Structure formats: C-alpha cells, structure tokens
Figure (cartoon, rainbow, N blue to C red):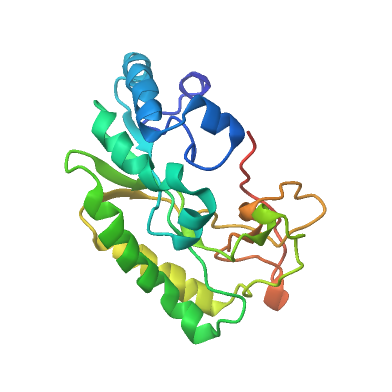
Length: 231
C-alpha cells in the first residue's frame, strides 16, 4: 500500500519470487507446486480486494533449463504441472528464463545462444502454460553458469565477458519475446549492473547476471549492483 500512498498505480502483482528453487524455507512452506497454488488461491482473493485494478501472476519454473532441472531435482521439474492443475483466478504466470554459455564459448556461439534458448523455452515451457493465463517474463537474461551456488568461490571460474556478443544474444531473445502473442510483459534483469565488488554482498547466481551496459569493461564506468535478491 506504500506505492498507493505515493500515488503510484499498482498494476502488476507477483506473489512470491522463484519459490520453486531449493531453498529450505521454500521447500518447507511449499513442498510442491500444488501447495503453492492452494496458498496463492487464498492470497489472490485478498490481493484483488486490496488492488482491484491489478493483474496477478503466479510463479512458474523455466523447466527448459537442463542446468536448473539437474540442480533442483524433482520438485522443480514437477512444479508447473502441479501449479497449473490447482491454481485458479490468476491472470498470468511469471517466468524467469536464463541461458548459460560455457566459459569456453566464443563470441559467435555466445551471440547465438539467446535465439537457441528462446526456441527451447517456447516449445518446452510457454506451450504448456494454460491458454487462459498470460505469460510474464519478470526476469530474463544471459548469465554465466552459477558455479557460486554450488560452493565454488566467486571468480574461481571465469565467466564469459560482457561483450557485444552478449548484447546480440539478449536482443535475439527480446525480439522473440516481443513477437510472441502469449507474452504480455518482459523485463530484463538487470539492465544496469557491474562486476562483483566488495560492496556486492550477495553470493548467488545474481553475481553472474549480465548487464546491457556499464560492467566496467572496455573503459565503461562500473555502476555496481542495481538489483539483488534479498529475502
């Protein structure tokens, strides 16, 4: 309600961020996508009463990612089917597609990875979203493989440099999203960003998220973090 107090219209609500990942609290509160759906069904009633003009999206997983499938396991793989079977009254699903060139990929491979990632994401994820629900991309980007999430010290394995090739990769994905009639909203995470610094205290995959500009390379000014997941 603080946004309303400031005169800002509340148009979009996403209750819960990536609750399908392997966080112990998330696993305890929402053991399955169906458990999350049942909780959101109750919350949607409350949110609609408070924000009658807002659209509401529930959080679905990008199961086209073989990296995340392998890392998060069965709960992640089955999340969407169980969510879609149990949810009602939502307007959309919120998805966070990320793709991962390897540290040895050259510029040409990296530049083409966005289009390739979109093709898999469309066929394996968007096509499974129930027709009554819009698709929101409330995060998406190319990123390095998040080795830090499995305990590898930050910087121990170098990632792909943030270059023109990354920009082409992200542009290809963005154009495909714009052309897709199911996609009602798309937000890049994050458009301004910097390399890891002493001030950037988070130690997860967000450290490896690429920026559109200002990463400190090529003489650009290092802006630092502009978005972090802080629970």
